[in-house]
Amino acid sequence: MHIPDGFLDFKVVSGTNLFSFLTLIYSIKRILKKLKPERVPLLGISSAFIFLIEAISFPVPYGTSVHLSGIFLISLILGPFSSFFLSFFVLFLSSIILGHGGILTIGANSFNISFIGGIFCFYFYKFLEKILPKIKYLLIFFVSFLSVLLGSIFCTLFLSISGKILFSKAILPMTISHAVAGIIEGIFTILIIKFFERVKPEILKIEKI
Amino acid sequence: MHIDILLSLIIISHGVNFEFFENAKGIKFFYEDGNPLSFAEYKIYSPDNKIFSQGELDKLGRVLFLPNEPGKWKIEVDDGMGHGIIKEIEIKDVKNIVFSKSSYPLYLKILTGLGIIFGLTGIIFYIIGRKYAHT
Image (cartoon, rainbow over all chains, first blue to last red; front, side):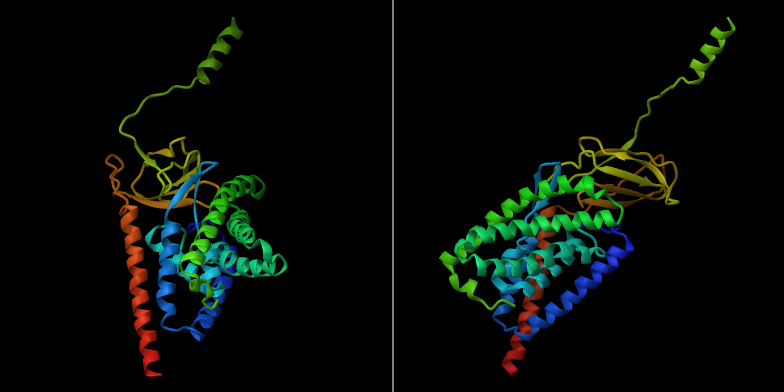
C-alpha cells in the first residue's frame, strides 16, 4: 500500500496531498492543545512501534508482500489524531529511510493508511461500540480488518484513476492479499489490547486525542 | 515450377535467425521479505525517455538490462498492487556496465529510523518539559 513516486498522476497527488496536509495541520493543533510532557515518550514509543512493524513484510497470496500497520491499534490507545500524526510522520520516515512509498505520494499513502486506519476506523469503531457493546473484541477484530481492506481498496482506486492499473482487474487480487493481512492485523490488535488490559490497563485509559 | 521458387523465397524471407550473446547484465527485483516480484510489469526507458523495453519480469523477478548507449536509464517495475520501484541507472560505458551496490541492509535502516524517532522524542520531551517547568 506504500505507493512509490511516479505511480500517481498530478490530480490524485495534489488532491490527496491537500487533504492529508490539512488533516495533519488539524491533528498537530489538536495534539499541541493538550500535550503534556508525560505523553511525549508514549508518542515516541508508538511511532517507533509503527515504524518497526511497517518495516517487516511477509508474503501473501498473489505473489505480493504486505505488512501490519498498527494504526487502528494506536488510535485505540492514543486517539485518532495522534494516530494520524504519528502514522504520517512514520510514512515520511519510511519513504526516506526504507524506500517504502514516495515523498510526493505521501498524501495518498497517508490517506490510505493513516486517515482510514487512524481517524475513520476509530470513529467507526466508536459508533459500532455504542450499538453493539457486548461484542467488543469482535468489533476490534472487524474494524482492524476493515482498516487494511479499505486502505487497499483506496490504493487500487488511486492507481486506477492514475491509469496505472485497471480497477476491475486489480481489485480482486488486491483485496484478497490484503484480507489475509487484515485478518493477521485483527488478531494482532486484539492480542495487544488484551495484553494491556491484563498488564497495564491504565494505558488504555489515556485521553484519546 | 515458378510457384515452387516463389514459395521458397517467401519462406526464406520470413525466416527468423538468432544468435547467442554473452556478458549480459541482469537485475533482480524482490520485496523486502526476499520474495521476488514474479511476473511484475517492467518498462525500461532509454536516456531520451522513450520506452526501450517492456514486458514482465520472470518468475524469479529478473530482467536482462541491455543498454545500447550511455546516459541515464530508467527502470520502472510495478506489481499492479501498489508496490513498485522507479530506478535510475547511470551508464557510462555500454561495454562495461558497472552497477553500484544498492544501499544498506534492512536492519541498519530500521535502526537508523528508530534512532531518529527516539532522538526527536527526546528533543520534543525536553522542549515540552521546559515549557511546563516554566509555567
